[in-house]
Image 1 (cartoon, rainbow, N blue to C red):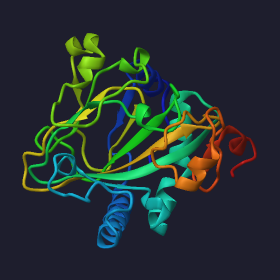
Image 2: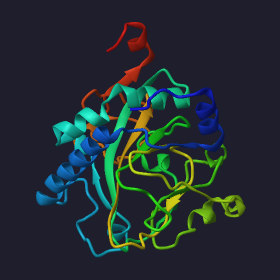
Image 3: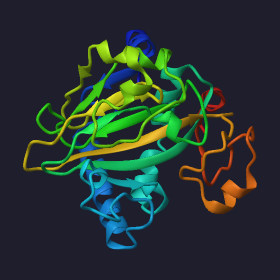
Length: 272
């Protein structure tokens, strides 16, 4: 993995709110990410599809935006190893300039053949914490192209975003009802070859085009939470019992739910 970041990459991320690193994974690493994602998704959908997936009604609009399977690292050993790689954690923490970083949740996002576009949205307002330093990684398991639904971003929107959002629905531009000034920003497409990774801030507006091809466009993603982030009252993916135990302002530091994946102190000690 090409996990060492340059000063120019860090500055580009902080300015634009996203960063594409092409061919970050070597051939063997890409095949491992593909294998683990395919296996974990097949296991999830082959069991109870009511468990952390959007495929309960596969014919509705959102289910045809992408097949979404969350927290696959909980149920697949190989995926757990990939998601909790401290090199990923170090990259995310370095880009955001934080000392420690925790996994919020991973998810596979597989845009099916002829799949619907992904409307403009923000990530962080869905989650159970509010932070300008939330960050997600998006791993391209297939070539992401203009034809099959690559990511698009509105640069710099993380600097003016509030914790207001819209759902991913059939109207591509609903987010502009909340942020009308963003309507005139020039969107930036991010096509990239398989094995590339894309980082983006949880408050950066992003979307994806329709998949106009006959093959799926696979991606595996993970959202990261800064160490020390606090509960904002939203349930999101929190289990019922943990959610019931929290009050607004509590630090989200449950090592089973949101494990610490990297901290600056680990480097000082020569590793975890």
